[in-house]
Structures are given as structure tokens and as C-alpha cells.
Amino acid sequence: MHGGSESLKLLRVIEGSYKPGVEEAFRLAVRAGLNKLLLPYLRSLGGAFAGELEREEARFEWFMRNAVEVVGVLESAGAAYALYKFRRPVDHVSVDLDILVEARHIPGAVASLRGRGFRVVVREPYTVTMERGGFIVDLYTQPSFAWVVYMDGGRLIREEAEDIELNGAAARALSREAEVAVAAAHTVYKEHMVLLMDCLVAWRWLNERAWSIAVEHGVEGSLEILLESCSHIRRGLVEAPYKLKPHTLLKAYAGKMLHDPVFRGTLPNILRYLAKRDLGLKISTRLTRRSY
Image 1 (cartoon, one colour):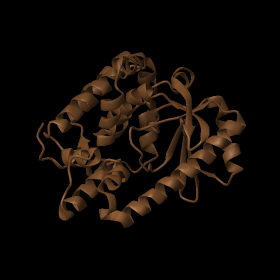
Image 2: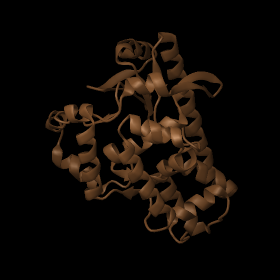
Image 3: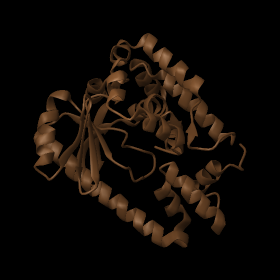
Image 4: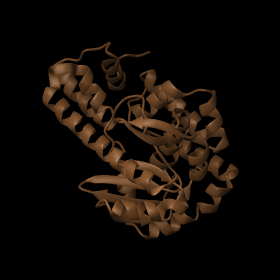
């Protein structure tokens, strides 16, 4: 393993085997934020960044408090749901709370959250985005991008959800193995970018069951791409976040289109999706962004 890359140094800091100097610590903090690892990074540094750690801990507590409230609302409404892209090997502060909800339960879930002060800010074919006081909740019926479905949300809820404890409250969430498959598909088909957080999910939770879930949902190609990308990162050959190459993405989409009839059937939705957006701005943002 080559130890010179910032990504590997960041991992070593989190593992407790490396102590950066002051200047390097600031650079690694930026990379940690891009890779959704700022909270565990600051925790590993101890008192060196006490003020920043206190602010990030406060953000984490705020996020979890809101998450517990939203889950309680869905439980009370009797919705079939599962926290999605939520369970990770380390604590982190997400930009929003993603939840898979059975399509027939979306109206009740939306009405119940409205009763707690949330408002609908975006309503799309497979997603309803709600917000209250800066806290964002995305209710998904299907994992999708640009209105194209790449996994079966209902099946994930029925077959891969399990009971967990969320800050002392009961909740339903995807299993760790399902999160491996979901992380790979989301990284490749939607984001086109691999974060160290995605690698940690794969490195720590990949097993035979995770592979089976990926195969059952037709996303094993994305899991192979994720593992290959994470191998490059682990060997110090590239930095994370790592943008996937165009030829890699084309191969992934071609394979998915060939073998997944739902993906193939919803692919034309891209045209409707793009028609409602500033295409130039969308492309520019994709090309210049450093994380997701």
C-alpha cells in the first residue's frame, strides 16, 4: 500500500495510526468533508480541532433528533418503509434523510409529515422531497436517477429491511448487506463518483449475502466497479472522491440496459427529466463538482 495519498492518510487518521501536522490536518479536514468523513476525522484528532468538533457533533445530534422524529411519524402512520443510504460503518452527518416508502403509503406519509410542519418542495415520479427548518427528507418509492429506476424499492423494503435502534427508538432500515449493493448502485448509476465512505461500506460489510442482493437486483456490475475503484484508492493510485471514467460508465449503463427490463423501460424518462432543467447548468455542475 502506498501511504503518500491524502486519502490513505485520512483513513489512517480515522484508524488512529497516523497523526498529521497542523497544516496537513487542515488539508485532510477538507478531504474528510468531501468524503463524508468529517465527524470521525475530527473525533480522531481529539482536542486539536475542538471547536470544529463541537459544531460537527451538534450537527450530528440535530440530524439524529430529526431522523428519530420522522421515523416516529412514519411508524405512527403505519407506513412500510426503510431508512436508505443511512447505515454506515462510522457516524456521519448527511445532507438529507433518505427513506424508501411503499408507493401506496406515500400519501399518508406526506400528510403525516405535513402535520409536523414539513412542506413538499419537490414532487417527482419516484421521489417526494420535504423540508422543515433546513432538515430535508427524501421519500423514495424506487432508487432512481433522472426518473430512471435502477433497483426495486418495494422488494428492498419487503426482503432486506430489518429492525434497528435509532437513538433509543425503534426503526426499520436496510440491512448492512443491502446497503453495500445500494451504495454501489448509487455511486455508479447516479453519482458517477466514489467516496471513501462508499469504500468503507464495501470493505467492512461485503459478504456473500451482499453479493447475492447485488445479483438479485441486477447491480453486480456497479459493485465490481466500486470494488475496483476502492482498490485503486487503497493502493494510493488515485484520490477520493474519485470520478469514474466515461468508458466505465458507458459499460455499466450498457450492461444494465441489456439485462434489466425496468431500467430499460424507464430510460426514456431521461428526456422528460432533462426537458424540465437547464441542461447546460446540469452538465457544468456534474463536471466541476468535487463530491456529492
